[in-house]
Length: 279
Ligand code: SF4
Ligand code: SF4
Image 1 (cartoon, rainbow, N blue to C red):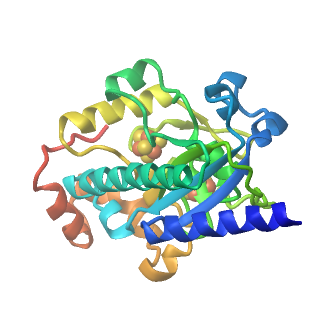
Image 2 (image 1 turned 135 degrees about the horizontal axis):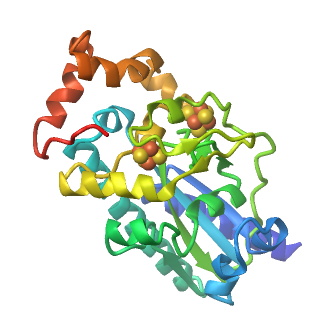
């Protein structure tokens, strides 16, 4: 009984600490979930990366929709860099905090590639925070391969802290959040999703990385259109959802018809980065 109480107290302390440091969402997974679901090869399991791992703490930081909507732009690029920095800093401090309580811990960085050219050749990351987020009960994986959360849909960036502390895992979500509307597929500027009978699409990751390479050269990296247009997430209650505007964007920009609606996004794109030629 005292162990359970101790574990619950540790969990609550971690939640409080992470929130204080800026995390919007926090979830806990036990290491055996990778073994139970076997959705990736064993070398990508956290217990393979660090055999002492018992629990994985996943932290999420939101992406503000109005900034994302300007993509490809320096505005979204800077937001992306800021969330990345915040995530790594928060995870670093949380691992430090666990050390002060006598637990071994470290964080696995949120991205983990030297340059986009590496992703063109090797699109897989050494550790999937998306899978960790699912196993920590934060969301479910959508058609577009991202973690869809109740709070922010896919507009959330993730990082994971690995620790030897035994912490009660969170329940997994029992219903998929993706409604398979295929907005992500219809709006993807590189047409990387191919039709699939399954919920999660077949996706040409190399093609996505190649498009990103182009954006990087223009200082307008990353793309993010597939998370911009997704209707899922309570953040839509604040910012709204103009699906028609998303769907008509490409044609309006190409023909200049009804372009006034996009003036703010165009303005952001015209400053601080090079022009990105459409695919
Ligand atoms: S845009 Fe639609 S299909 Fe794509 S991930 Fe979101 S809910 Fe699923
Ligand atoms: S990031 Fe952009 S190019 Fe890649 S899948 Fe999403 S919408 Fe398509």
